[in-house]
Length: 356
Image 1 (spheres, rainbow, N blue to C red):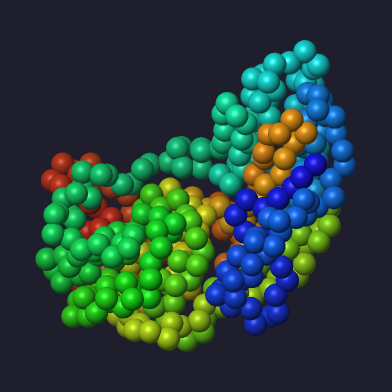
Image 2: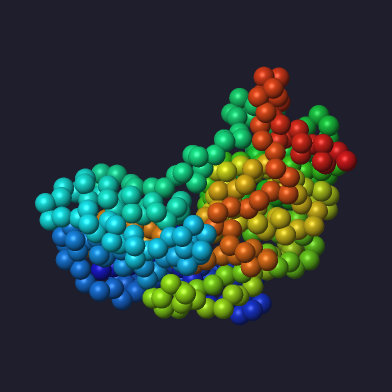
C-alpha cells in the first residue's frame, strides 16, 4: 500500500520554530517524500470489499490525529464505528455501495479535511459549514466593492467613504508578493483603520498566511503550537512545539484591524484568523470559523481509492484545538433589515469599531 502526502509533510522543530520555518520545512518534506514509494509501513490487505474496509479503518485508526479529541468532544468511539460499518460490508457489494458505506463512516469524523476519492465521485463532509448561516451575500459585496476597486494579486481593495480601508481576499491559494502588500498598505496609509474580509475563504497556502500576517506585528509573537504523530496509538504524539510569527522586514501596518469571518473560513484561512487573533490591535468580527486544524495527508486503498485525512494537529496560543473553529471577538450575523437596505451588517459593525 502506498501512502503519500496530499498537501504538506511534517518534521520535528526546535522550540524556537517560526511559522516561516514551518512552511519551508513542510514544502521541503513534501518534495522529498513525494518521490518515495511509501512514507508509512502499512499491512497488506486484499482488494475485496472487506479488505478495503479494514485498510481504510486502520489508516484512520493509526494516523488520524483527532480521535482522542473527538471522543472527548462528542463521544466518537472509532472501534464502535468499525463494528457499526463492518456489518454493512459483504462480498457481493458494488463499488457504488461500498463507496457509500465508506463515505458514511468517514463522515463520523466531522472533518472537512477528510474525503475519499474514486474515479466516479468524492465523498466529503460539508456539514461543518452547510448547517450554518452563510453570513455573506454576493449582491452586498458588489455594492461595497463597486467598480473602482484595485486588484493586487489575489486581493481586491478600496477605501470606503468613511476613510476605512477594505481588503477582500477569497483564497490563500492566490499568491501575494511582498511588493503587492507594500503597495496596498501605502495606498491605505491615511486610513484610520483596515478591514480584511476573508469570508468564504476555504484556505490554501500557509506561506501566504504567514506573509500577510507578518505585516501586522512589530514583535515576534507566539501564535500557536504543533504536534506530530509518533506511533499508531490514538495518544501517540510528540510534545507541543511553539510556532512564532516574525514581523516582516518590509512596511508594516500600525493601526487597528478588523478581520471579518464566517463559517466557510477553513484550513489555512482558519490559521490566518488564529494568527491575527493573537495580535493586540486586531479584532475578529463575524461568525465562528469552520476550523480544519489538522494538516492533511493522503493514503491509497488496495482498490486505488485515495483517502485524505488530518494527520498533524495545530493549536492556538492557549494550546486549544481550533479544529471546530475560532470564536470571533465580536459575533455579528447578517440582518434581513440591513440586507433590504443594501447594507452588510458585519462590515458596518467593523466600520463602527474602527471609527471609535
